[in-house]
Length: 229
Ligand SMILES: Cc1cc2nc3c(=O)[nH]c(=O)nc-3n(C[C@H](O)[C@H](O)[C@H](O)COP(=O)(O)O)c2cc1C
Image (tube, rainbow, N blue to C red; front, side, top):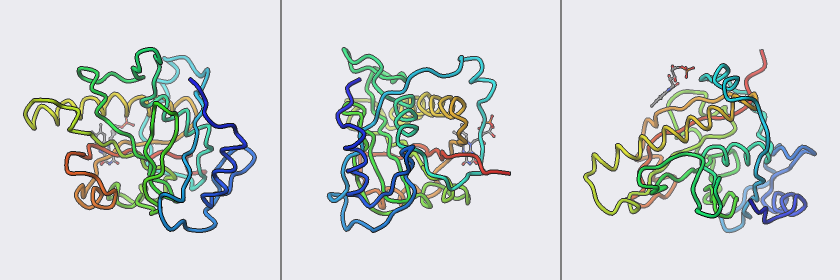
């Protein structure tokens, strides 16, 4: 997959957004709050390579609710999102997870300390949406605020030309499950902690995310490094 921006561009963009990146590309802190999402620059994401065998990953897959506050390096985030629902066949635009009738109706939003981003698989980038930290709204349990990343799976109902509300919810939930499992397996491969979870107050989260009425929140998933014992 084509990488649109060089590492220097990513670092420059991170500087412009007020993020400080360590030599490994980890987002360390937010130095200043941007006034609007327009001031944030898209973050380019590289396609990952290699990893453990499939059976080793299944041995390690588990839910974890104890997170370190250590941020995820940009390259790890890139791998996570590509594994989750990236384009693995560029000639057809098909993805790493199946979707009913190839509707690809699930959008992946990433809530972090410095704002909310939308994963754009086509351009391999995270597009800034908001400058607010909305992680606390992604679930009721304390860990949702502690994990550096809160993924929110949102179904775009405009991708369904027909079908009942029950059908739409069924396909959205099923398709989210495949993506969520990809996140679990990527986390197993990289020594990350994760747990998929319910969103307690969907209307409040949808409002904070400024979603359109036809965008439906399905589930959320926290990701981060495991808390050191
Ligand atoms: C659809 C779904 C919803 C879940 N909701 C929550 C949740 O709200 N909070 C939570 O801590 N875990 C949640 N979980 C994680 C499960 O509790 C977890 O998968 C289960 O305990 C089995 O543990 P394991 O994933 O380590 O095998 C959810 C899992 C699924 C599949």
